[in-house]
Length: 341
Image: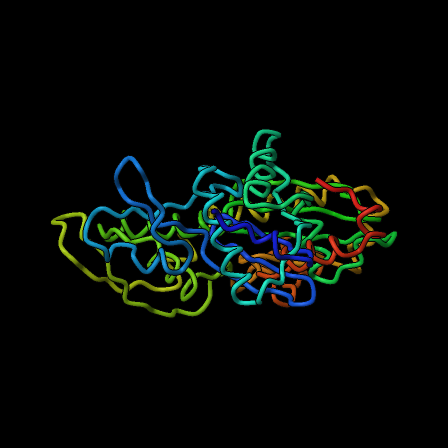
């Protein structure tokens, strides 16, 4: 008999099912699970799931043949329905085990603004496949704004830029609705790819996904400055042997600049399309950054310079979407006034 966490549960649960990471929040408990959205599967046709999350990533490149690491979400939406549903089931089981059955039949899931109707239905079906009965889909920027503590339901304009692993959602919110917005399938993963591409071109060195991310976390800056150095290891594209090189922060800032330009242009686009009354509010309220992109050093200063308004990173930016969705799910009045997905 398959495990159904919702058979035991009475509390609401919110899930931020991201391209790179999945977070689960439970009413009264807060964030109870944070795992990479990765699945280790057998390399044969059966594609049997061996492990999910951090356990799966530990196998990457270190397991003798027969195991593939799959990221079942791409650009914020489901790319492999079967693996996504199984990953979600295992994550929920892990969350229940940690919190002694604290979940509930009410489930909120967040989704980027750029999803299609087909992608939206796939997300809802994945939630129902793991036993949820009452599924609510919430736009990520609204959840992010609520999780960041912005006055999303007041008659004042608030702007949030939620920069995730695969997508970025930018929105001006007032009275629980989205007044202007733009969504692009660009995020932290694309910064990683830009770094890997640069190192391959410049040094003939192939980097693994985790190494590229480590370089980003160590050296990447939206604004050039300083000259930090880092030794990176990978595989030589010339002879296939292990190799290492030393790179610096200036190189990486240059390598990621096209991605950063896409993000800043998107924010400026939303500002240009915002109604005048709400645009005036933003002079005081500014832009709030959420998601992993909020942690990129210098991005807040670059964006402030480009837009002329204040920019700040939310407290605990990685948790804003999940916590905001949980708050919306538990607030009936807010839900009734919200513009939901």
